[in-house]
Length: 167
Ligand code: FES
Image 1 (tube, helix red, strand yellow):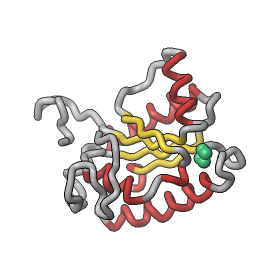
Image 2: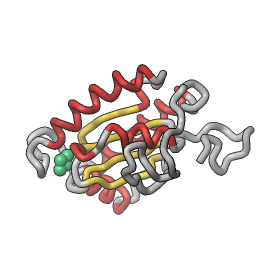
Image 3: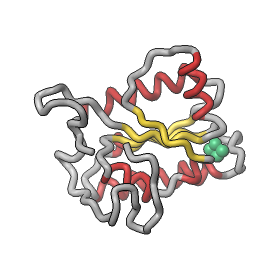
């Protein structure tokens, strides 16, 4: 996948964002936003995970390698994680991740962690809209980063884990 995607080289930049959504809260919030036919940009490709604590930093790096311009990680609110501490670990990992990303020349704003509950359809739409506009203003990632491909397959992380779906 390339940043131009289905667009021609002269088409306006359309951000590609990988969205890791916790099954129990944020995914349900996204579902509710869809059911309510709320308007928000179609730029986030949703990857459902059981908990934000399941988002291995390598998943995020692989998303960038596969062409994402930004990554969104959405979690249950503090105290609401179905696995008790998963979202705390997810938030902590995110803080470490953004400092790692800086070493690859990836701006902090390209990786956002936020909380969206099952009832917060409006917040989901708002976060997606903000993230899309942020990435749009930053421009395509691969023009400015030295993050290279290391996986042996299109859907394979460098540790051999399979990451699906590709975006
Ligand atoms: Fe939702 Fe852990 S179950 S963040």
